[in-house]
Length: 287
Length: 320
Image 1 (cartoon, rainbow over the protein chains, first blue to last red):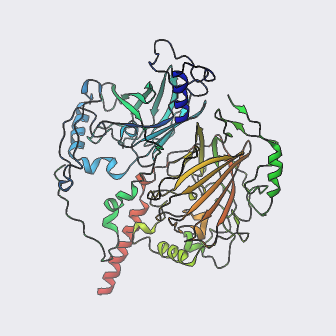
Image 2: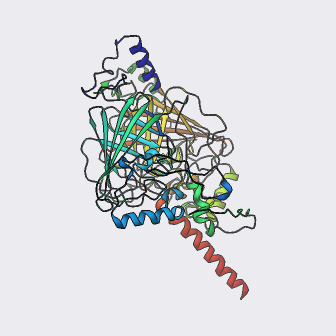
Image 3: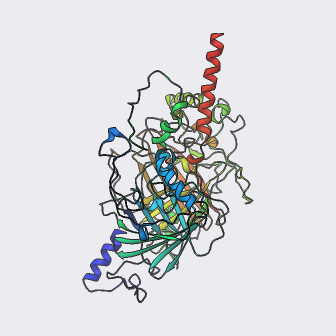
């Protein structure tokens, strides 16, 4: 897509609208972005590209100060950076039982966080993990979001869909366009995924509504409404920017992390050969 | 809106002379990557690519290789009756009626229909298959829930042989139902990643040659397998080396059919390149379900656990 974006910007800056009028159709009134954005052949906002969140929402959606990492030997390397809340009002409205469970999750992070075991991340967590993801937008058709983490992906079906027949880790996503915004409605989750590394969680009644809107050619506004009447007292919102990866020849590589957790999960069941290198006894600070 | 492309039928007519070289194949006519001789021309995406999008499956009754009486189906797949057939219609009853063809073998080159595997690689496979209770590295990458590999991920298996192809400007993506793999293939002519980057599924680079999508894949790691599923029989669990080089060709020959061909070259593992040809059949109503493989992987820990239980029993027997 870089050629298209580059070409669009060049043409616009030269004051020429020739030949690209279809791609540059006027946006909806009242939502006019301050920069001309590239459009797909059918006039939709063009979200194609490799995107990544910055910030520390993957550690904790809420305000958090820096703290040491869990493994003493890793020193500053795995320490947790500070970050400001991406949740509206800096509060997740848990029901009392759920607030207690969240606290318990936080205190038992390593044994409970599905990310430790390389499990599928769910939505919205997949979006703001510290790995890039790629949006591939087909014309008048499905939209693919592929995540580098664990080779997770989802195909967002545009238009009407049948109710999901089974619960899944990544849910069933249905998309529609609301003016300049891609709205993705996802249901059909299981209760196994988390929102971050701080123990924020949900039930299988989770309903996620994401809104992707261009703020500029290389920045998307990502807004998420979370509903789960079994866990929260009301719906709540996440908002953060997503940035286009500008690296030359940016591409998703593999982070097939199963290989990195096999020793952790199955090591006690491996046949001992006598050639094993002993693990240095890592000292845990927490949890 | 889809725009019908104007594809030169003259070129198609010239290229079709390469047809029907190998008999007994899974599809009615063997095209060997050439343009079809039909008048059907694929629709185009807005950026001018032949449109191969949709949901495709490739269940088949054609066996992967031609059977040889020296073969040991029980060893390869734990299924003594496993050879001589393909995947069948899929062993999960999904109510689709599939007309499955039965050809000689999916391997069309060499003409013997046999993959030219080096002896060391067969020995390694035999060791691995015989020692899955010792260590997870002896399982195939599929059983470990890492990947079915490329091209292994498109070799038809008994269930989950669904693929969705999506195309956006400058990219083709193939979403594999089995282990939720989304392969993204850039078409912009960029070079492969540097040789220091090794990947389970290699690094894919695509280009259109007429109506054929040609994908060149390099930069493999040496941990994966060329094939992982039981239907591939003797080739299952054969290792891949870092020298593996794969070229895939996708040609949509009519509304409902993509001719798929792949040439596999790995001078450390095979004595010669070999080729598989099959059709991908459009099944718009087939649904790709999430295959959360690793999240539900009981096979690996249970198999290892059984191995340790055997060790204990053997130790007890030894001390008595």
